[in-house]
Length: 256
Image 1 (cartoon, rainbow, N blue to C red):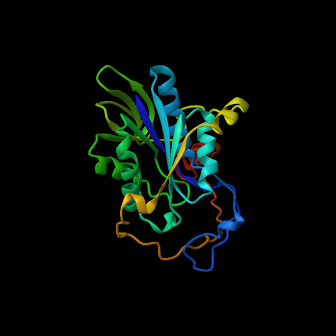
Image 2 (image 1 turned 135 degrees about the horizontal axis):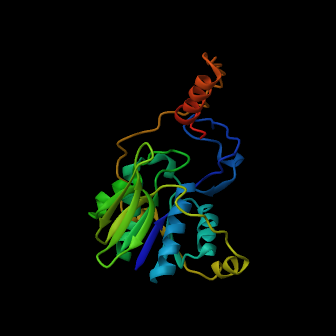
Image 3 (image 1 turned 120 degrees about the horizontal axis):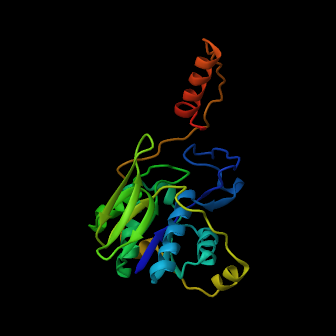
């Protein structure tokens, strides 16, 4: 089974960011970059499927030259080879434009399964994976926690609201968007890092994949969130107050 995993390089989650002079993106020279979290879980799911069923894992990533470091990380963790779509204006593209770019890059591979993260940590559209499935004309499912290969295709477990889950069967080929937390992420070993240096990383220019499609959505400006404090006084007896506090921590603060 050939599995393609689309990964994105994003600013590290704890990076201190500044808005650039255009007010349309961050000052990139100030930040360090890492693999998008849900994409890392997609990669882990692909590697586990390969270990159980055999096949090949190919990572696909679009972005400027610096994306090569994140691709090499994926190769060090166990991916077999990689495709880098060299694109310097990825932040200016909407989800449809990015999905078209990825679709054109992976079509010659004819994969059995395409995995993407649920959403990116920077823009957070949550649309690229499902649009990619539509462009490829394949079945898809989102919010996936686990994937199991079956004789007829796949059995997947997807997360619903309020602690509910759903198991569904899908034929192959298919596209899945992976939720964070489904597996324990592996670290790249020293041997894996050494092997990654000799693995194939094919570079494809944006212009080689056809003209850029016009964006249907444009990012006009971005701004830092305003910091504000609020205090809530919970009334009632201790038992009632404790129950109210737990409910707020679960459904408002979302820390439980």
